[in-house]
Image 1: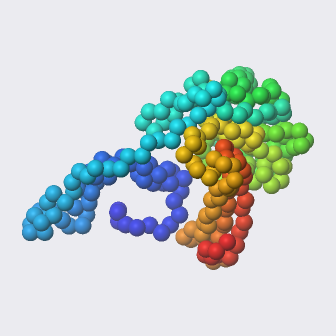
Image 2 (image 1 turned 90 degrees about the horizontal axis):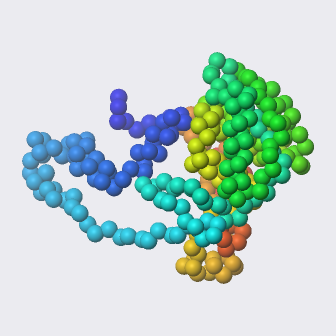
Image 3 (image 1 turned 180 degrees about the vertical axis):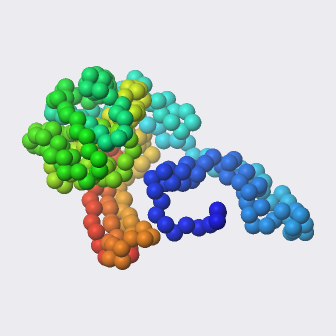
Length: 299
């Protein structure tokens, strides 16, 4: 029956729809309250004449509090063009660009699904992305030749072998760009586990159909991830109003505990995560992760 509370775990598509709903504009929420809301709780005039009459005018326009946006600064004190909640990164360089001497790429094709590239177009697009990295302020050498594999399931052992081969010596290769055919949470998790735990190399995943368009804004978004993993600082915030943080004597720490979702095994642990700033610029946030007793809030 529609409109009921669900205790089951959301799939990725449902999660995206939930996020879109959660960030609706104020006027959209107001319309939902005054139209769908009154219908849902039974406050239609036909059913509750006296009550609805007493509530008429209850939803009114009130003066809202307005906080000035914190200014974001990139290289040479430039600010991005912001409109409708989106940032245009055109002609923007990172405040502090990282250095990428050794990197490569791996394309993982899923059997039965069409690829966005052939070998020639893949190399051409990676070359365009390499130029975009340089334009954004990353000192990036040309990538070493990558490879392509075809698998049918995310748990195929060829993924680990291919990533090890592409990475070579992880003490030399800083990062591997992973190109996947389509959004696939299981494959993404598998790649991250292999890169972080088994190989010891940074990975950044992109969806082939989006990467193939070579759009500057998409390249810029991926470059943001590259630069952070290289130890760079993407942007600075105007910290003149930050008080003791601006004195470079204060660490900002974020801590959260995630508990097992509905339907998890009875012995599934809770996961705790912590991030912390390293200086007054607030540009890098090293993280730590632990598992602990299920449903325990105290870390």
